[in-house]
Image (cartoon, rainbow, N blue to C red; front, side, top):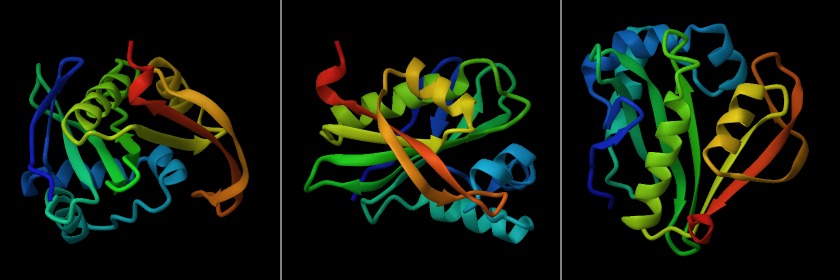
Length: 180
């Protein structure tokens, strides 16, 4: 079990999702970039958005911790970031995010990735966090580099994305030992 927490990053507050986030979650899920690069993000209506928020807020299984990203200045929903596939035995996890188009380009993704990674290393005592993205998703590649994740390689034809095609992916990782 993982205790729910709130984190601070880059002019934002990261907190577990709430049902009140559902309208913004639904709007984000309709964004063309999200639909392309997050094909598993299937949120077609308000009920599905509520279900997504409730699932994300339940950290009791210990395998995931999802945060809604809330802008400090406006209190507006700015996206979602999740530590998932948490493997306590091997001290590792994966990280992923969806950033709202009205928030992109302001360092929100990078700051959120840094904050969640620091929390995972410090509180959960993880040693490795993996970030993957389609090679064509250059914005996520920039986030990975800015957040200190090393490029470890290319996974060829590894995932089917929103266009229905298999894409090559970059595999980035950050180790607890990488933090200076």
